[in-house]
Amino acid sequence: MEDVYLVGISMTPFGKFLDKSVKDLTRDAVDGALSDAGIAVGDVGAAWFANTTQGVMEGQYCVPGEMALRDMGFEGIAMTNVENACASASTAFNGAVTAIRAGVTDIALAVGVDKMYDMNKAKSFAVFDGATDVHRREETFARLLEMGEGVEPPPEDPASNQQRSPFMDVYACFARQHMKLFGLTERQLAAVSAKNHWHSARNPKAQFRFEASIDEVLAARRIAWPLTLPMCSPISDGGAAAILCSKSALDRFDKIRALRVLASVMGTGINRAPDDLENHITRRAALRAYQQAGISPDDIDVAEVHDATAMGEVTQSESLGFCAIGEGGRLAEQGETRLGGRIPINPSGGLESKGHPIGATGLGQIYELGLQLRNEAGERQVEDARFAIAENGGGIYGIEEATCCITVLGRA
Image (cartoon, rainbow, N blue to C red; front, side):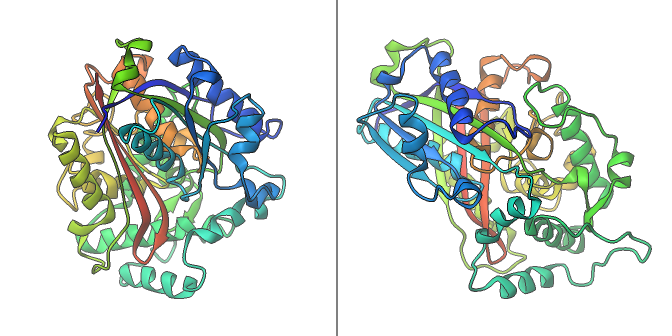
């Protein structure tokens, strides 16, 4: 198989952009990646376009990639549309990597774009309704609630916010299970959130650029106990893109800034007991990724993980092997995941603070890791980063994510 290299990266700011269309965000992201790689539209041999919301929001259920990319001048090449819930963009990246490895093309584009904001908030939240089994919705949530039985909010706890993504309830169930099994505390969840807001204050493309202390996070509006607003990712607009090439095409690019794709792994879950976390979807995919990359968790210098809530980061830090299962809350509370710590996680600010335009999120993670490995991340730079990993999950099937993508990058 051909070695694959990441030679161009770009990300728009994430946030609320009612004046920008999907096509506008696509153009901004793709133009940036082409410029970063030093190539033109005509040099790209195939493209993968990730989007999850345009069908619901605008009725563009079919061929969104062809509509957005042909307007930019991409013609005559293979285009693949990708919808894989919150893992759509990393799935697009995986498709491009796979095609280059197979010799189908030597230069490929992966782009993810989503516009989630609408003046009608109910329409924005409706996007999430299809990310679980629609035939088993009640059964799914009943099973999730069972995982945290016996762990209840304090009597004086304020009522949860009623207008929210159902995934906040999913993560609240995960958090209560972790509290029951391992003693996770609200303060540890707040430590994750405070750390990510501190990181995002140093990211000019983040949706939220304010710092928040642990006490401020704990005192914020309740979303779904034990989660408060700063612990939860917002809805977002934004785009991100990557240019990939084969080893045989690498001479056409700046080799000094090129990064090697050491692993790109996708997985789905298995039927497992709720407390069998050794077989969590992320853990199983990560073990395959480490094997493919030829490294171990101890070699990773920086990570971007899917923290749709602070609980997500706790789970993924454990599943990726940065600590023992059950120790993710303590890992954050002790400062080990902060810039300057043993394993900085989400230096971008993560989904909680950087933003979460779900069809773009995975490539947004890869953009951040690309900056880190190139030593171009400015005041949030991880010193001497050589190996980086991204974990991007999507949807819910049963008791965990429906799909998961793991990407490992290294200096070329």
